Image (tube, rainbow, N blue to C red; front, side):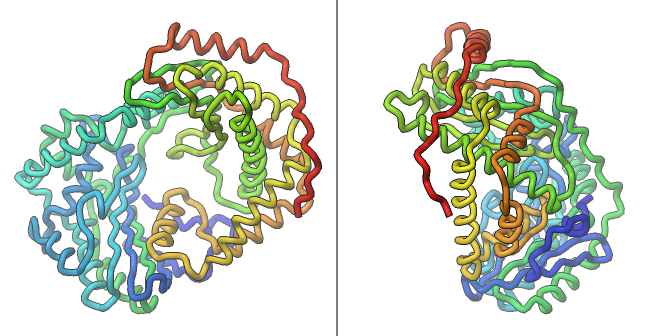
Length: 480
């Protein structure tokens, strides 16, 4: 089921402009008045279930269920919902108005007006989709061709490379076996009962969060949501939480993915068990310090890419928690065809250089200034944030279990963290960032690499044997 609001277990101040609530049936809602653009609103209904919640015989049904939510319910016959959306002036379509990820399904309605008729009809549509879908067998059969066509369209080089990448980086975990697009044989033949099993288990009020942002009276919107959703119940057993699998200890490994349709790229990753601690001020401090260190590394990569003989086209470093399954710190590079080896050497040695010698105070101050400027710009633009983006942002914080904050709060937190921040503190954070299992090297190439995986591992070992020198001191630059 959905977790309590993140701020309930956090000392991070939530944006006071957002009204949060929970219905007696467990459904949560968050409301925010915003008048950019005027007279419009955005609704996001998030179901706390995605493809990771599928059984092995349901592969693809979380996404298929997203389609079926538009194809008939107790009070809206099959085919009528689209006409209703058209009459209201909304764009429509299963993937225009919804998306399915590994860990969530989100239904999206952007309302061109906020009059009672439009709001009431839109809330009723979401209520019907979330708890009253009929899932008629003949309607499922009619939709199979649409979903299968979508599967064929998406099954290109990009998706194949992502599958290979996650299978390598998340070896032994559930994510690589639960891509939302699913399995063709299941999509072709799954009987109605498998759909109803998924719907009954996971489409339930305690797994649902409704986001409403727009030019409306918050009291009136809250009353409408309560009136529409308070009576929703689901007496079926709640679906089981998936076993995501553990992050396995691994040494240096390499994997090469070859497909004529892919670009030449390189990823060097270190993986660790996921950090599932609550979103607190201390947690944000740790994140900010690590980000600043990685930003220095990114700037060094930029300098290399602008050199006379650049080892790559572009490169970057980042860190992420992936689907509550794995923490990853990665170096990425886009490379010229056939030039993966100099790129790998550069990535490995720059990573080792920054861990061994750290960053300078001048480099750190530059990144602090850049980061602060972006936050100050966000504060300056707070009053003109657009409604759909705010609705998406609120929905994202529900999924990430983080606190939705005001831009001014983000700036204040940052300023507190960086007040007196030293290069030594950042350098310790950088050392800690690369303590995961690895390095794991994933290469994509349009043509075969002679020697394959072993050639990449050999190149990595050669790069690791070279001594790295301290970075050359830059000319002193005063950063405010």
